[in-house]
Image (spheres, rainbow, N blue to C red):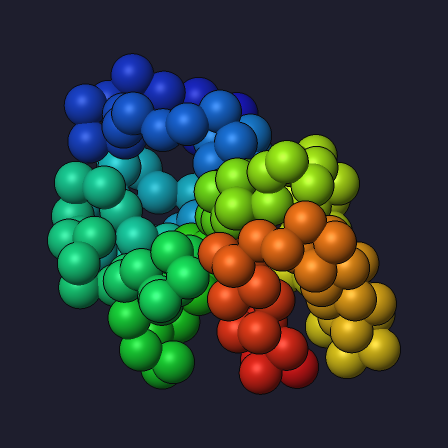
Length: 153
């Protein structure tokens, strides 16, 4: 833990899923690089959305395929939270359900790959894997996801 002195402070405690908490792990979440003497109590002190100091709806929305995304493209706090807390792993798990019975695990791996890489050629490869699964099993929900991801490349 980076700041063990704050481990049991009420304003530092929040329920989180294993994926988000594990992804955040030792990442910097404070704007300042200096070690604070007391736990920061202002939203502006945090790089990520703070569960006690920020409102979820001010930062995130669900898009048309069910992913958690930043409410607007300028919202760096939301983007930081998605990256630092591994929200795209949660998004991949949620979206992979639409690929049943084609193979949830394979779809989740391909979706995780798509969200992780920035190179468009790699993104296209992952979308190709997903499209084949969706086409082979004629999965309309999965096809809608694939079509949306293709538009993003």
